[in-house]
Length: 599
Image (cartoon, rainbow, N blue to C red):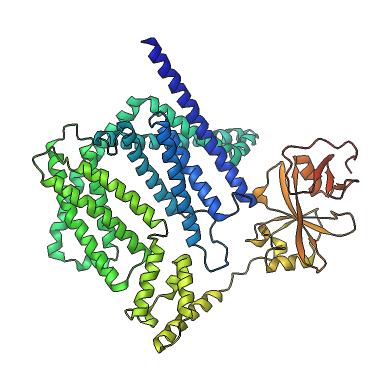
């Protein structure tokens, strides 16, 4: 018996090492991606590439960490690759749909918050369909396996996140303690991205590993949590039944007047579904009589709740057409309706174990949720696209008068789809109605173009110039005020981020070069510079890049103690070190130059 136990221990040790390695690599990946983002280099430059990489680095390692030792390697690899591809499509579509107008740059370089939220839901649901099926070697696993996987991992993720939060609280407190005695090195360390990201990833993976080997801890927390949720079921059921009983006396008009009635009803339905599932658990444990009656009542109460919500949505859509929010509510209503039908059947079936049919309902609706997320976050059923098509269709068909149409919706809330539709409407010709529509669209385009940009402080007041006392050429400031320099975007071309500007005669021929550095991409020992010079036409264009490393060399540059190498104007000496003027960054602090002493 000793040999199998020893083999199991070795396997567990390997899983722990791989899990910790994946967590650490995830943190390093996030840090490297943030560095690429700050320096506008691949994969941090193109928004679609950056967005896809960000979603993948956030979620795919979580799949690996949670699946190690539980899912067969081949299944885990296929699932991780498939999830990465889906996340890449989500990111690409989100950023593409938010490009306003042909030829414009994206308003965002990372996916919107809903993409992260529903991406997490997609990954969680998918993981707990793949894992149990792999364990059972069946397409549809026994329901207790689904229950065990989902609730165990939910508790595990919660505990691991709490551990990371407490860890950073302890690190922050430790930094403050050292700061009290005049040592701020600890505080500087814990705030560095290259430290914070790997530590967070490593700590989360470590917490998952610790909770994974403490099965009793997870089961205990899960049992207590489910028990508390179960006894909330009678309370929520009583509230919903009282609400439904009051409707014949109040009517539906007050509910519809709130304009948020459907959302509230769907939220109440979701709570009933979760609480009923918590009371049912895996279907093996005995259920108290009170919970049995409450569960059946909740299953039946779901039907009128969802029907009223659907009716409210149908009224709003009939009156005002589709909007992105209404389309999302319709998707939620579809999910709620599926659960309502399944739970109502479970409530009236008395020849089987209590609420047994909800098992199949939960498994089927989990797949429906994944399908709907894939449809809504891709061009197939993008809410903005569907809403634009519907609203424009209502306008062109005569259901909406031109003077009542919300042209600003197309400009402000529908992304690229709205902008494209607005351009098509502005080009309409022919009938007086078409001309009225074209006039409204053209007026909307002109009004948006005419919105003035709030004046900011003079550029000379929001930049730091080195060496101290040097004056930035007026022609340089004038060109910066008009847009990016030489077709290259720097921090000066964005929102005046307080760039650092360095002035020197870089070519050694009596001319004046201007180098720009974004503080967000600097460290105490790393200073990237973009160098600009005037061309024959008098325009400032980028002539190259240089990366200055080591604190003393950076201090020499800021003080103006710069010397040119005798062999080539492309080399400079700072604090006894030589730096090459080229797009290739030096990877470590160069050795002190022997031929040229520091000036």
